[in-house]
Length: 105
Image (cartoon, rainbow, N blue to C red; front, top):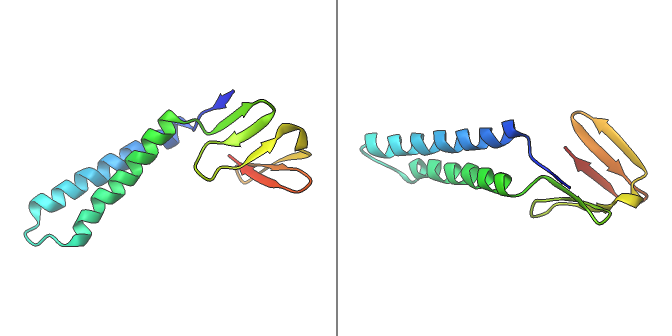
């Protein structure tokens, strides 16, 4: 079973990426003296667009073979039979076991 990211979060990354891209293009076209910081907007745009495409392709959580796993480069994983307590706090779900804590949204 795969659990997706929230659609609102994914769309927000796309919108922010497009906004930073347009802003960067406008700055480069309009300004006479373009400095290195003006090109940073293209970097911000690239980061948001990469996050958008990653979140569209990969899902947030995967539940299979008795393991729950976050699907991001440094994501945590935990065996389902090790979970002792599930707690909801400040919009996050906290899974507790004997020796691990895992925070999942």
